[in-house]
Length: 459
Image (tube, rainbow, N blue to C red; front, side, top):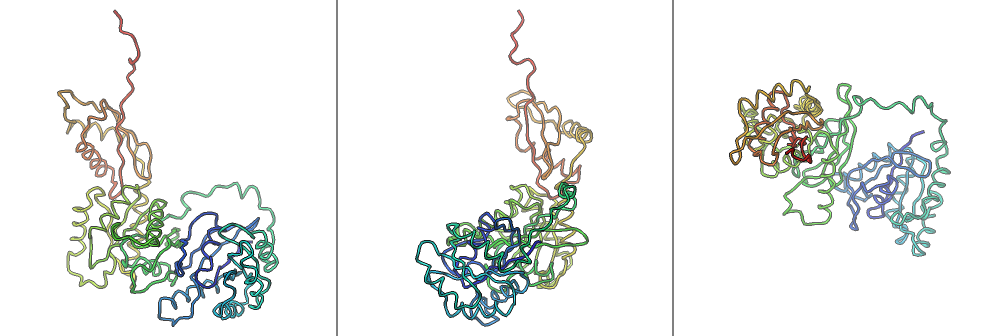
C-alpha cells in the first residue's frame, strides 16, 4: 500500500536532510540557516522495504497569516492534512522548545499516526533532549542523525509500529503486470518553468493546477527549491517544475541563492520542454535572452510565455511586435512559439499548454531519409559550399542521427573547412522545409572514410 509521510517541525531541525536521506539523493536545498525550505516538496522515499511519498515542509513558526512565515505555515498545514502519517522532528541537542509543544498540539489534533524524530542525536549530546521529548505526548522519540545516516533502522521500526495498517506488505503483484513497460505516449511531459525573479512562475503553476500548491507573494525570490507538481490537461499528463528566479551571475553572491540557481539549472537539464516566463512590463531584457539561450544550448524544446498580460493595455498588434522581437533577439530558435498569458487570471493558459504539446511534438520529430536527401541535393545545388584554398568542398549526403532535439549528420570531405555561415544556411533550410520551428537543431559534419587509405600505390 502506497502512503504519504509529511516531515514537520521547527525551522533548522534537519527536515530537508532527512528528506534527502529518504529519497536517496540531494534534492531539497540544505543550509545552516533556518527557513531555507518555503514550499512543500514531494519525493519518492524508501525506508527498508517500505516505499512511500515523503513531503518536506517549511519550518513551523508562530506568525500572522498574511506574513511570509504565515503563508509558509499554511503550506505546512496543508501537508499535514493531506498526509497519511507524520514525522514530527525536533533538534535533540536543543531539546523540545516552547514552539515544539505548541506545534505538537496541532499534530495531535490531526489524528494522524505520528513518530517523534529526535534528530542530531549523533554521540551522546542529544540523549537528554530525546528523553525530554516524551513530554510532547506523541509517543517514544526515535534518536537519529539524518546527516550521518544513524538510527534509520529504529525509524523503520517506529513507523511500522505507529502505522501498521499503512505499512503492511502488499501481496505479490502479477508478474505479467509488472513486466509491462509504460507506453511512452502515456508518460508525463517534463516541463520546467524558468525566468527572472518575480516573473510569476509559482502563480502560473498554481492557476494551472487550480490549487495554492506553491508559495506566492509580491516578494521577489520566494521560490528556492525546484518544486515538481503533476497536471493533467485534456487527457495528457505533465510534470511541471517550478524553479527559482535566475538573475545575472554577477548578482548572485549568497551561497543559498547559488544553490537555488544550481537547482533551477538541473531542472532545465532534466526537462523536455522549457517554458521561459517573461514579464510583459519588462519583456526581452538581457537576462530573458540568456535564459532562452541556455535552454537552447541544453537542447530542450522551448516555449516563450509573456506573463502579466492582464496589466498591459492591449493594443492592436502588440503580440505581433513581441514575436518580431523574439525573431530578432533569438535567431538561433527561429519560429519559437510565443504565448501571451496571465498567471493571475488564467488568460491564455490553454494556448500555453497547447504550445507545450506542439513544441514537444516538434522536438521528437523524425524526417524520412529519402525526403531529407532530396532536400539536401536541392539545397546544395542551389547554393554550393564555397571553395576553400581553391579546392571545392563536396557534401555527399545527410541523415538524421536522432531526435530530442532533431540532430543531423552530413557526410562530406574536409569537414573542418565548411564555414559556420554555410552550416547556418543548412540549419535554416531544415527548419523551414521540415517544419521544425523554435526547436534546437544539431548539425554535425563528418568526413567519409577513405576506402583507399592504407593501400600501397601500384607501380
